[in-house]
Image (cartoon, rainbow, N blue to C red; front, side):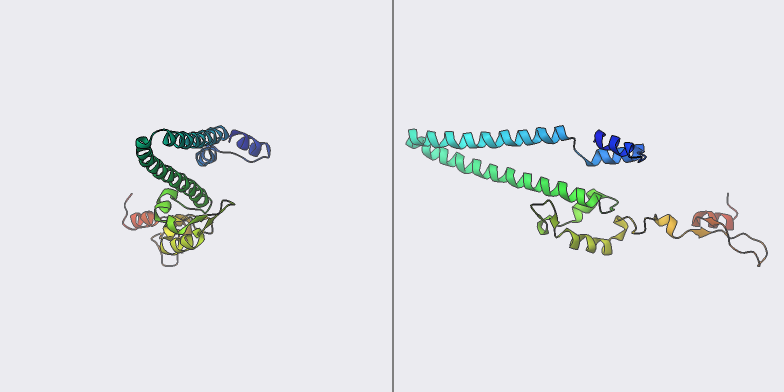
Length: 188
């Protein structure tokens, strides 16, 4: 990630500390990803060797065969559970990445509102079914998303200060509603 930030700086992009923290929070270092890939490969090799060893043991002792069949069933279930967990982890990672890019205010909250059973991770890393759910959430719970025009809510509807005086005076200065009420009640 440091190389990406350096490349952006070299292109004249001003990188603030806030931007740097946001970028670093969203991405995994290549060495960490490589380490996880090596670990996954090693675990798959161990599972293959285990299956081979079990088959060899089944051939040697008939009583042991029953016990090994039970263990094989248990291992198959464990393998399936781990595969499902890995798939869910990949889906959640892609979902969080897609939500971070879609101007959400709280990615984790929106992840909890998404029905993952309706999502499918395609071979190219896209999530089928996400757009429909996001559009529904944008309609039902718009407060969870940044405004489309890029303005914060406080910037959309600025208040105007009333200045006591003659009726001819016009409202000209923008202030918050709390300041306007305080001025009207002569509260400092």
